[in-house]
Amino acid sequence: MAHPKQFTELIGTAILVFTIQVASSDLAPLAIGSILISIVFAGGPISGAHYNPAVSLAIALRGGMSFPEMVTYMTSQIAGGILGGWSGGIVSASFSEFARADDASLFRAMLAESILAFVLCFVVLCVATNAKAADNHYYGLAIGLVVASGAATVGPISGGAFNPAVALGLSVSGGFSNLFYALAVSGANLAGGVAAAGAFRVAVPEEDESAPVGENAPLNA
Image (cartoon, rainbow, N blue to C red; front, side):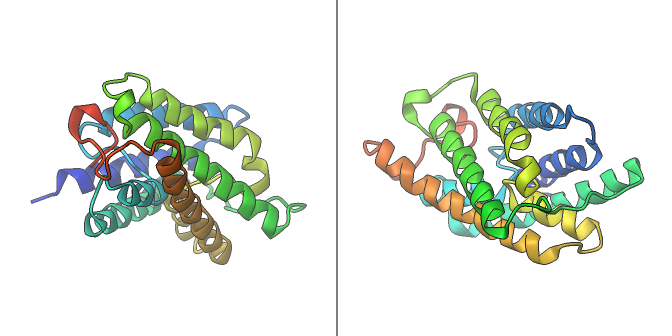
């Protein structure tokens, strides 16, 4: 029997990476942000709609899910990223090369990825696990707009993943192209998630260790 939460994470991440793989125009950031808004609202009531190992790590550190469950989420997300990258490459007849700009140093790219992953995870924690924001109807917009903004601003520098499932999905589906860089980006993204969990504890010290669940916190598993 399929596990609905993990299956939703796989499908949602596949949809996200598929969109990234086929989006090639100047409107790519808008397309990526828009599809993320849609799938966050769609999957939120089922799995929490993380679609990103860095987000799952931040939520686990926040107390919103167990670490064993976090591992199952991450596995589903990475598998979904590979599936989405592979199917998107077939549809577009080309596979995107996940890489940093030629004039960008590895340090600049890693810093950009860690900062945007931090921003994304911090926003998720604030709009989806904070009791003061319970029952809000804007959480999907907030999350999708962060990714759209990041893709438009630092995407040309670092490649614009902000998500290990995106970096690894594009690399593996493209024949393990730039695998070292994809792994480095994944580490930077996870570091951003850890930093976001720490910042949330400082910003919202009155919150209980366990994040609210269910309708009051759409992104919690």
